[in-house]
Length: 443
Image 1 (cartoon, helix red, strand yellow):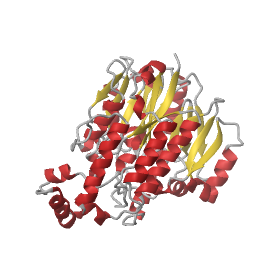
Image 2 (tube, rainbow, N blue to C red; image 1 turned 180 degrees about the vertical axis):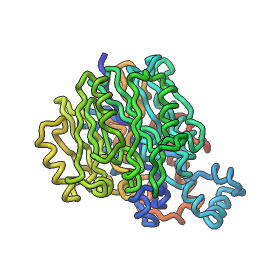
Image 3 (cartoon, one colour; image 1 turned 135 degrees about the vertical axis):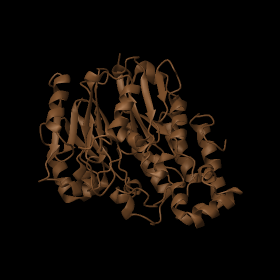
């Protein structure tokens, strides 16, 4: 049976803004309080998704969260009408208000961890929504994320959905941004590589000094158990705390893998040679490691350009290409490296550059915008077809964005209850376009 890798991109929400909420994410913090362009951001992301669909990849769409989240604000004691709730929160607790207005669900790589059916004991595709406990603005996402995933992958014969892990420091889970599946072909049993930043229960575990290690080992281990993974085909590797302190807040900022290829910076991991040797053995000595040396690309350049927050995709000829942000082309050292890379004898033969600047300024590149799901032919048929991108859906979503999104947005604009009602109208229409049913609290 044929298996493919589908990419489900997070549609940028109408409240896309720059609040600088993500401590440890250099781009997010440096862009704080700038005026954003939600319409441009959504169209940029949609255009990137359509380009991949035109390249022959299976491409889906994940709906955004409802923001501003007045329901969470009410839970925190801001009472009254919607207008009063927004005004009170904005004046009395601006950081909390900003968190409840964030459009961060656009970065779908943090939505969940996904294990395909060849890897799981019950031969189902498993989804665990990420609890994202490290950041307030993201920790409120997972209930709606679970509803969205269930609406896209509804058939219980093929799909198994798990609730987010307990919202506790020990189980901090950031989803697929710290998870890589390595395999010889998508239908083979794969080796699932979980990268963690910290082992909370260990007194000897190395830790970053300046920024938080968001992914915890206990969380990765729990997800592996929930997904019924074979321990012999599961590996855990620690992210280098020194690169976390340089702005590598997730593993997908310093490494990306696909099929049997792992593309990574030489400073990405701790004890990497031992882990890689074990993985190579389990992949029948077919693991291809492409290590980027510090002498050619520094960690600073990798973070500023998001060299590794690129999508590594398989082309129709069996070779691979990187889907990279324009920032990789604009950084002379990174561009020189990528130009050289495509001439070498590796599986990566091409680089395609895309403008996703609105997302990049807030700390997310092409890889952040998508959740990868490996599916068999039967499983693909069971996916909600209204969420799979084609020419008709692209035109419909483009029109929807142009109708409902604002060209410019500042934080204070989100205190306007008229804007809140605009967004509710827009998202209600979107659920009909994508045939998602009632996934939002206001419906």
